[in-house]
Length: 68
Image 1 (cartoon, rainbow, N blue to C red):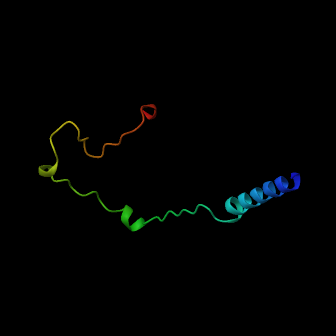
Image 2: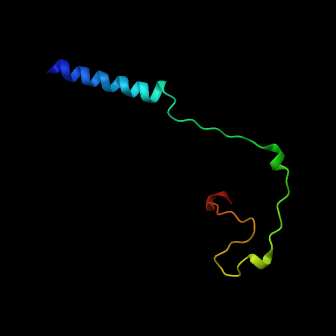
């Protein structure tokens, strides 16, 4: 019985090591497009913008208060 539990634990540890450490679980990439970074911002046609309070001003970012 103890041998069976020990084998199960070792198998679980081996599966964990294989899944997390040896098998690239998470892959990410970030591509930079420098030719797009130099473009000017396009003009916003004010006709299509709503005049209600729920729309923020142009280029407004919802930041956290501690960064002021």
